[in-house]
Length: 106
Length: 106
DNA sequence: TCAATTAATCGTAATATTACGATAAAAAAT
DNA sequence: ATTTTTTATCGTAATATTACGATTAATTGA
Image (cartoon, rainbow over all chains, first blue to last red; front, side):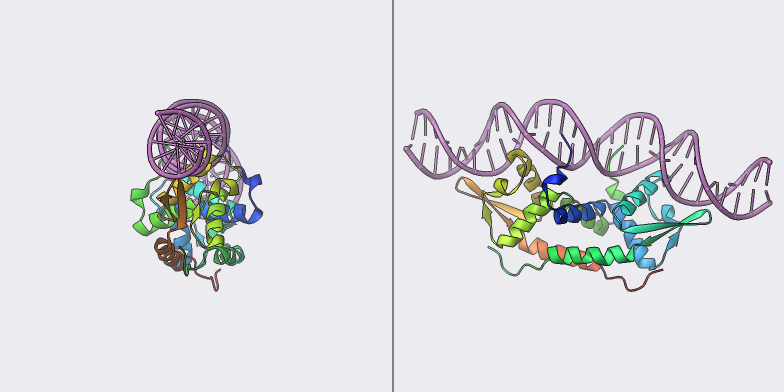
């Protein structure tokens, strides 16, 4: 089929998966890396940073927005993108509870 | 198209994306959670843990193996699955360098 | 007002993912 | 040797993702 049976999993499992999925493409990693690097809102030059067309970059930005990782604010005729700070730190806690260092196994 | 232009991104970006992608499905989150929870190799009862068919679970296990997150070892007529401890901790470092707490932005 | 700029959306094509029944392959039990 | 158990793989169908050119919508500048 190809349809994800999300209703069969817990809320936490679905949230973690959705968060991970948003980072599941190098372009989206690159976007977030860039936003973290400049440590500010970036207005309008994201397309130049990526080796992809404007339409494709816009699509990736939409994914990141959908996942609550970035925010976009219209500023004149440009759009300013930012890391969604609150969501980011909240999701880091989700991650922390999942990605524990393994001490001993097997 | 639909083909990921991985050659246009850095090695680190591709590695992070591949790692994240492996966790981009609730079933795979559930599998890893279970393996972490029991903190041991699990021989043969993974299908019972998930609300999916045997074939589908096997496919998800294959994905996790491909991403270097788990290992499977044949043990008699069963297969024992484990977190790949070394890879796990190595990838945690990748994550740590990426997911930094944001102090102030915008 | 009209042209230019910027980003989103539409339309479309190619490829990937998800899911499962059926089948195969390997080992253990009878 | 045959049957049973267990997991992987095959075949297939449905849906999702990725990518880009073209178009649209909104705003600014002339």
